[in-house]
Every structure is written in structure tokens, then in C-alpha cells.
Image 1 (tube, rainbow, N blue to C red):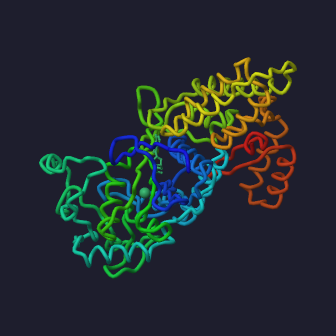
Image 2 (image 1 turned 180 degrees about the vertical axis):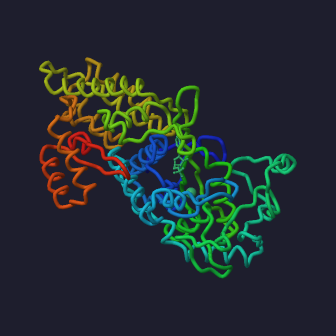
Image 3 (image 1 turned 90 degrees about the horizontal axis):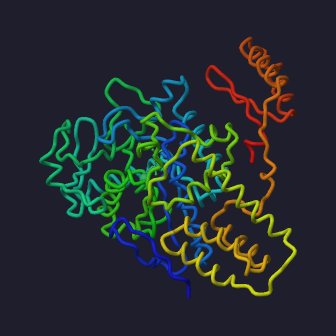
Length: 474
Ligand code: AMP
Ligand code: ZN
């Protein structure tokens, strides 16, 4: 008999006891990043809570099948199905192919989540690898009468799905009355593109033949089609950021439930935004973002960011500033110093009330992943004189399998500022000049010398940056 886990389900707006569809396996899908830029730390926050969830489920004895997708096509600059494809737009800007751009940023995303100790999913699914599945789903929807054709694509008619908007509790009548935006030839404001035609006289880099003409899939259809292909038409848990509730996830439900005729997802979990001063959302479009790499360059530990994220409940805004992160890093290192000091303690007590903490920490996690409470209890336990040191260490080991904060790795306690030596700065400049003069062999040789000195060069379009390997590869 497994322990009872409670999760807040956006669908019912209540905490519910988790009951899996099949007794021992839990199927989870997490909406992945749109890969036209580096993920920012707000995006990354949205992958930390599913990681806790997954590790907790495994701890409870479930097998977990988890998918994260990579949106490498179809996400347009406007949610109302107009504007440019974000990946193609960035490719034009950088003078590269859309494929190069999307693979580069997908790999960068995977590196970032590894640095944050986020366990890799069973599979990353790339939208462009599932074009046939997406076309198949649109065809089923067409046969069932849910679609119509406009000048620029095949659209889903939301008025045909009586439960449309149930996740976001959309007031559809209010929405219709309040229409001010240009809906072009859409029938309803909430209708969305399933398949977009390549605009006339245009050649896209990413385009495919379909029964309706050359084009590319809409953004929402990719997730539904990949879920059907990899996990089936009915899954346990779907996660994402709260911005996905009113449009993306609402549309995923419509497509999926109209295709299969059954319930799509049992539990919808949404993480709140990482915000800056005055609750301003960090966003790629807002242009106010910072990535994990920038933090690492400023000598922050990726684990300090994870610790910051876990100290706020995933359903609450997480306020970020460099000052907050500095004090968080201190707190994180202090916690580890405290743990380390346990190993050196001589006096042992036989009395040990550790089972109380063991229960309380687990209860906190079982209560909709209350990580701030669990971390608070760890601090409290460490300061409790009535607990045997071995018991303390065992509890830390046990729960760090879920929190994944490297709490028993003390190597970063000696972390010192890493300064880039003048010699390396000069070598890097020399290498850049060689590269500009197309002396690539010499440039490569200098790169190797720099690497041996403990630094790595990363080239951008018209600049380079020097990273200390030790801080980058934590
Ligand atoms: P995107 O790359 O825009 O598709 O977003 C990837 C994930 O990051 C999605 O789950 C978004 O909901 C989430 N997200 C975007 N901005 C933020 C933010 N400021 N805080 C937390 N999550 C975010
Ligand atoms: Zn999605």
C-alpha cells in the first residue's frame, strides 16, 4: 500500500488524492521549451517541480514514464495564430538554418537542466519528429467535423466542443462579446490553428506536405499528438507554467478529447511564474531574462538556484534578484556547513527522535510537494540536540534523493572566486584574431592551450566569452 500523495489539480482547483490510472505506473507529460533562445531561469523553474514530483513518485514505489517535448516548430510570436514562427525568425536573424537554431538551443536546454540536477525524462520528443502523427490527428478531427478551412490554415471550431475552456474556466460568452482583436476569418475568437499553410510566395525552411497543402502544424497540436504517440490518449499528469492554462492547455484538451472521445489528463499541475521586482514576469518576449549560464559566470552555483526555487512553493510567485540569490547561496552553503559539522561531532546521544522528522518531512512533500516546509524541517532537525548524528545524516541522504541539492557533497564549500588570469585573457584575444584571419588551425591550438589552463572559450556571432571550466562543469 503506497503512501497517500495529494496534488493540486488546476482542473478542480482543489488538492486531490493522487490515484494512478494503472496501479504501478505514472505517465507524466511536461510542456518543453520553444527552442529559439536559451531557457531563462523562469522557464527552468517550471522543470524543477515536475522533477520533485517524479522523484517523489519513484520514492513511493511507482514507475514513472515522463516525456518532455521540444517545440522546434509552429510556436508563433502571437498566441492568436499570427506573426512569425519564433524559430524561423531567429534563424533569419542569425543567418543560420532553423534546424541549426533549434538543435543548438535544445542541447543548451538539456545542459541547463542537467546542471540543475533535473533528471532527464524517459524521452525528449521533438515536434518535427512527429509531423505524421500531428497530421493524422488533424485528419481525425476533420472527419469528426471539428475543423474548418480558412485562407491561412485548418482551424479547430471551439464552439463544437461543449466543454471548451473547462480548465481555465473561460467565460466564453464574455469573451465573444468583448471581441476587439482581429479574428480574420476565424469563426470564434477562441478557435485555433491545427495546420498553417506556408504563406503564398514564401518558402519556409520547415514545411511539410499534408492533405490540405504545404505547411506546418499549429503549436498546440504537437503536444496532444506526441502524448498520444508516446503515452496514450489518457495520461495521469500534465505539467507546465500557469501561462499555458487559458490557451495552450485549453486547446490541448479540446483536440485530444475530441479525437479520442475520452478524458485526456487526470491531474493538471501548473507552476507559478518567476518574477522580478513588482511581480513582473520574467519572459523571453519581455526581454528581461537571465539564464543559468549568466548566473554561473557570476560565480553562482546552479544548486543555489535550485535551493531558491525549492524554498518557495511551486504554486507561488518566486521573486528573483541577484541580491536574493546571493543570500540564498549563503544560506545553502551554511546548511551544508551545518551538515558537514555533524560528521565531526564527537558527543553522541542515544536518544533519537528522528522518526518524528522523518514523518514530518515526508508529509510535507506528500502535501502537494511542499518543499519549503521540508527544507525548514531539515534545518530544524539539524539543530536538534536530541537526535543522533547518524540518524540525521541518514535522513538527509534519504530526502536529498528527492530534493537533489547535493547536500552531502561538500566540495563547493571551498569554492573561491575564480579570476581569469591575464595570460588567458591575452591568449583568448590572440585566438580570436587568428580566427578572424581564418587561421583556424592556429586558433584551435590556442583554444587547447586555454582549455589546459582550465578555461573554455565559447564563440558567439561577433564576440567570444571565457568560462572557467571548474565553475561551468560543476
Ligand atoms: P516556452 O519556452 O515559452 O514555451 O516556455 C517553457 C516553459 O516555461 C513553459 O512551461 C512556460 O509556462 C514556462 N515559463 C515561461 N516563463 C516563465 C516564468 N517567468 N516563470 C516560470 N515559468 C515560466
Ligand atoms: Zn504543450
